[in-house]
Length: 109
Image 1 (tube, rainbow, N blue to C red):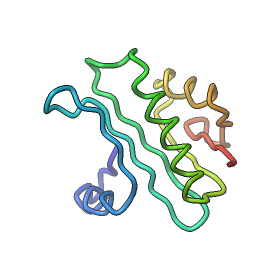
Image 2: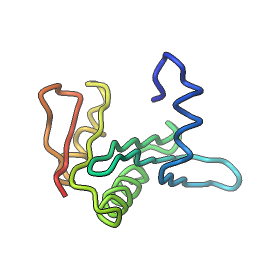
Image 3: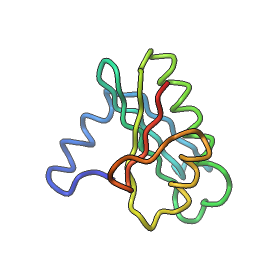
């Protein structure tokens, strides 16, 4: 989620990075982004609540991992709320390991 402080700044800069969307008609129902520097990247996956449980998040996260590899990144990471058990479970199923903060997950590429 965009940071509470200056969310517009975050959203404006997001367009400089790889973004993937899933459409249902003309409606965006899922979105993923890979914000990177030269060696690492942060992954973010959002799925509209009406479309959860359809493996859209998995498809997007798999694509982010592939994009990170194409970009030559060495590590990617993400962060979610502790109650977002499906995302934490998904990340682990794709090889991510937990960080010191239990909300974080990391994948060495």
